[in-house]
Length: 174
Image 1 (cartoon, rainbow, N blue to C red):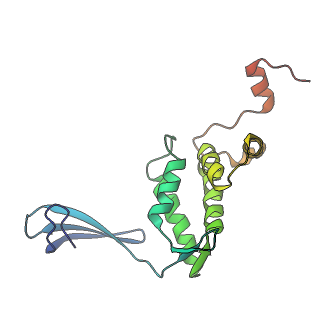
Image 2: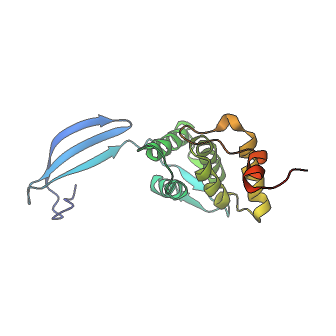
Image 3: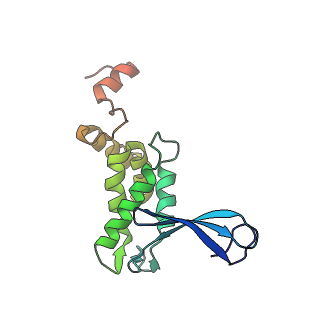
């Protein structure tokens, strides 16, 4: 393990603790005497993602985390909710035991989870993932969320009904 401060390889483990799916180690560099933390996770086997164009690339947790964080940017989510969500998606992929999985399957898992976590993040992710052709497709997806009131995420207000929106905007109903 290279020291992040001086780059030397010699370090000593001071403390180890088990975490969900891994180990947290506190280390001390023997060259510069600074302390740093490392996280180790067990990776059962490599998973390759089959992209839409047929290419295959190794599954990257960081790439998944980046996409979900982008969708959840500036949303009032509890601390650690995104990391737990990514852990759950990753666990689901490894639990399936397949060496190859389609990007569409991963996208569907993320969409399903985001719908329960945060509606706005879901719409943001869906707009990129589903490649909406026009505003009508986006409106249709938002309307489907408004109809399914049982899916309102925790700590998020329910979407207003069309009657409430019309009333707020001063529109007359026909």
